[in-house]
Amino acid sequence: MDPWHVTSDIAVLLGVALVFALALERIKQSALLGYLTAGLVLGPAGLGVVQDEAVIHGFAELGVTLLLFTIGLEFSWNRLRTLGRLAVIGGTLQLILTIVAVTACCAALGLSLKASCAVGIVVAPSSTAFVLRLLYERGELEAVHGRAALAVLLLQDVAVVPLVLAMTIMGGSGDEDGALVQVGRSALLVLAFMLAFYLLHKYVLPRALDAAVLSKNREIPLLLALTVCLASAWFAHAIQLSPVLGAFVAGVLLGESPYATWIRADTSSFRIAFVAIFFASIGMIGDVNWIAAHWYWFLACLPAVIFGKAIIAWLAVRMAGVSAPYALGCGLSLAQTGEFSFVLAQIGHENGVLSTDVFRLVVGLTVGTLFLTPYFVAWSGRHVNLRGKRGRGAGGESGSIDPGESAGHVIVVGSGPAGRTVTDALFGRRGLVVIDLNPRGAHASAEGLHVLVGDARQPEVLEKARVETAKAIVITIPDHNAARQIILLAKDLAPDIGVFVRARYHRFANQLRFEGAHVVDEEEITGRTLAEEVQDYLGLVRSIPAGDVT
Image 1 (cartoon, rainbow, N blue to C red):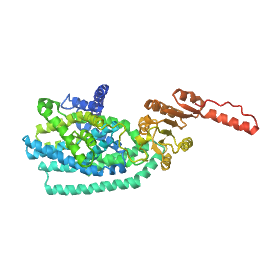
Image 2: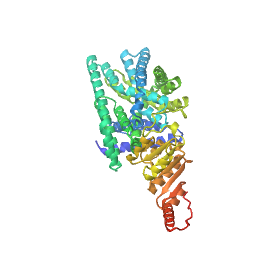
Image 3: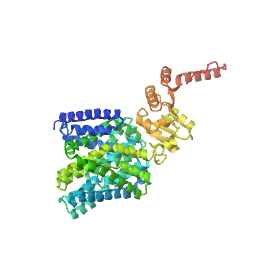
Image 4: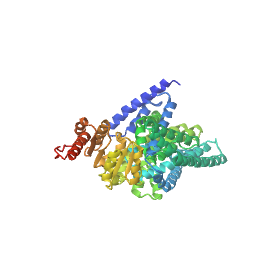
């Protein structure tokens, strides 16, 4: 394999994806649709420009792994535990009801029972990567309907193994006794997987993270996080679980630490490129020529799949106890077939269960539903009227600021002596958030403060601290360049926020004032204080005028 051929394929794919994404953003559409379109245009059914599809799909799998890892950083075990009943009841019902309904419809259209059941299995899963990405971008992942969608999607990922086994058995390459043995083996491996991660979370990760962060080399914690992410994804794949599920669990583990925001900010830049490749690779699978030749089947089946899945998901989560408006929002979010549908369809096609035409129709429907997913997710958000009504997580967790309780809060950047003085003076005020690169500053969390370990020069860190609703930000770090960057970023994200900053050296004070900050000039204050002390010592009348420190 020539590595430069692969490099050229990736460069062309990203370049065309960029063009389509920019074009769609200009008309206020999701950039994800641009990535899908790039794949359709450049794939084998389009212009055939991209040649090495296997390598592209490899990069795509890495992209979705990183995506689910960063989404996992948003969660904690406590939050996930609350999804248990919803996942088991809602997710199981959604899969069973979808398979039964699709099987019945296909059988009525003349397909054999085996082929009909295979189509039901392919259509049943929704897209974990696509839906969670959209909900995350819209800030709706913690909403009631977002949490319901997450619960169903996690159950679907766990169910990939039995779905693959069922598809294999229908193809005649397996038997029922062997399947039972395989299911039992998989169950034991899942228990081993969970035990291994419990031990990792309890005894290994805290020490490893502390050692990595205290090394004062910012690259070390990032390398540790990526190692945990990729190793967990590989381990899940090795025991025939979904790799993205392993990556998500790894993110949850690291999300329990005070370094979650820091890790998320550092992984965001290259994660975006991999995610673009992932969605473009999904588009490459679609066969636009076949769809054009059989448009009547495509147009007949597309709305049936979308509205059928939405109704079934709505019914499933309603039976799990979710109220009707939020259940409908969840149903609209899950009204597509997902990335694992491609895998299941490929197995069914290779085993002879699905004919070529049925296979191409199912793949085309999957791509078509993904194209429509951004609109349905947006519709679901508007339907449940989420403004100001997002679900609240467990309060007091490091790295998690409650949007309802934080409005009008104060952000303090730095937990050194100056930062501690500010937090001590403001202690007891509702919504005090501390951001610091030094993990030792996390001791403030024991005093009832919200703490984020991260770099306040990163937009994601300030957004996590909800700077857009903050009343003021106090920058106590001595580095004037870093302080200036934080001022500019804070003013960009929240133009009306009050900014207070220390100027360690007098020559930088006017520059910081020019950026719109209230400045405390340390040299001026130090000189005045020293002069006053000397005057008091000598018994002189104080004659130093009060300077303007703002």
